[in-house]
Image (cartoon, rainbow over all chains, first blue to last red; front, side, top):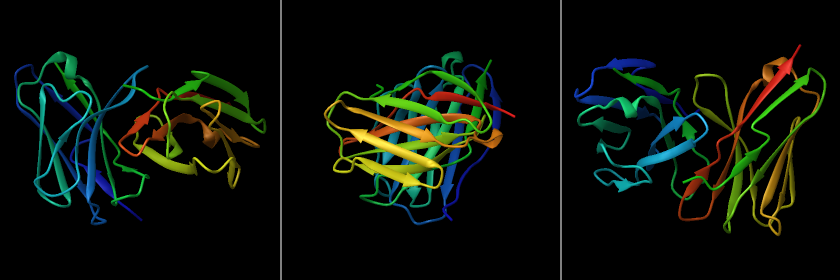
Length: 112
Length: 109
C-alpha cells in the first residue's frame, strides 16, 4: 500500500513565524502536491512537483514556497505565517500519468 | 478554483438506505474520480471513471458519467454507519485535477 505521511497532525504557530510542513511518500512517486482545505471551498492546489528540484505554482501559491530536494520528500514552507493561513493542509502523491492521487492524513495548522 | 460541484452539500439517511450524490463540472475531462474523507483525515480514492465510460461499479458503489450533461453521480447502496464521511468528486482535464467542495453524508444507525 502507498503510504504518505505528514510530519504533524496538529500544529499551532504564531503570526510571523516560519512554518515547515513535511510530507514523505514511500512509493517512489514522481508527482507530489500540496493542497489546503477550507470549509465550503474544497481542496485548493498550492504547489506541485513533477520531479526532484522541480516545482510549479498551483492556484494559491501566495505566501507559500516549497522544496523538493529528494524524490520522496516535499516540503511546504510558510515564510511568515498569517492568521488567514489557518487551515487543513493535505499532501498527495501520484505516479506519472496516473490520475489517482494518494493523500496523507493532513496537518491542521492554526496561526494565532 | 473548483471545477466540480457536488450536490447536495449535506445528506442524512438511515442505515440500509441508498445514498446518491451528484457532481457537475464545466470543462472537458479525461476522467472523473470520487474520493472519501473521514472527519479530520486525508482523502481516499474510491473509484475512477474515464470519459468514454458511462457506468462503473465497485462493491456497493456505482458511478455514472454523462459527458453531454457534464455530470456524474455516486450511488452507495445499503449504506452503513461507517459510510459516514465527506465525498468529493475530482475532475482530471489532463492539465490539472480539480476537486469540488464535497457532500457530507451522515448515515444514522
